[in-house]
Length: 179
Image 1 (cartoon, rainbow, N blue to C red):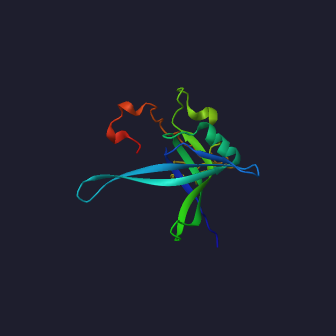
Image 2 (image 1 turned 90 degrees about the vertical axis):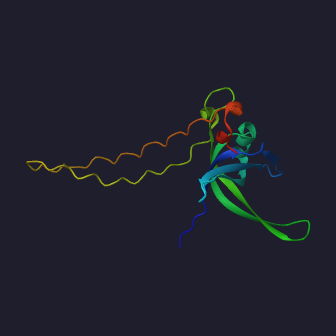
Image 3 (image 1 turned 180 degrees about the horizontal axis):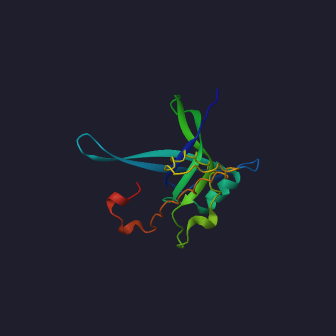
């Protein structure tokens, strides 16, 4: 039986990354990401709900995170959930979920005004979308001969780049704040 453990987040970085260089030469960076959801209750009240995720990246990616990621940046993270067990100060066993990032991409723009393309990690691999069955052709007066070969299927269109987030949030209304 097949199984999958995959998480995709698009949100805002909640703290500057904590980076540690380990004795064996490995590097780990840890930071949090907040995602927001807005919904309306049955009574018509608008509710904003924020979820926080702990994210960790390793080695070369951790060095990139150390160099470029800052609190408030918008980021795309793809990875898998990892459960950690620990004992708290009172001796109780506790559980924690962490997203171990396998790929990430910076969204929005840098402080100098250029887009995030100069320092992105490779974009996550995109699978081609399944091709929809072609619509039936209108009836023609005379039958057409069948082509000898079919044309190669077209690749799926490239994913759209998200709209940039303004660097200066001071003029944004309360409803526009990311968290």
